[in-house]
Length: 126
Image 1 (cartoon, rainbow, N blue to C red):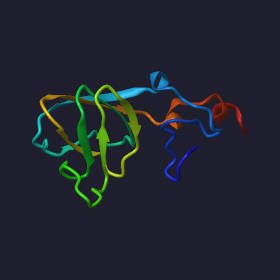
Image 2: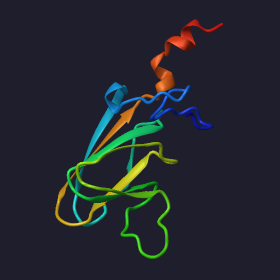
Image 3: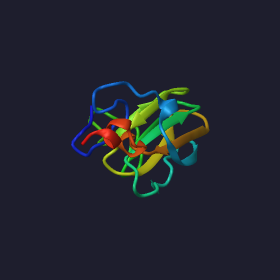
Image 4: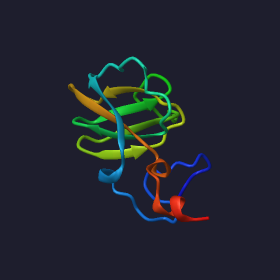
């Protein structure tokens, strides 16, 4: 369902699931990863939903510099296992990442929100 900001990253307003292959891509970033955190990258303005994919296990932080979590929670950070596709709607469209071990790449695809795709219901309802 939609959140208060009107984002539909995984379902339509009536709860129907939306597969990632039907979401409209708008921008792609490739971020090279090492065990040191990358510099914070500000993503293109005007989007609220991103699809993440990494070829190695990594930490991804939105709005700040990625760090290894300890016993205290790290705000706006997530663990992205290698080979996993994850759709997110972060509070801030800024990203930093760090590999757990080795080197690899994180791909960040910005996507149009579902409501921007001109649903038939939006065009026919009066």
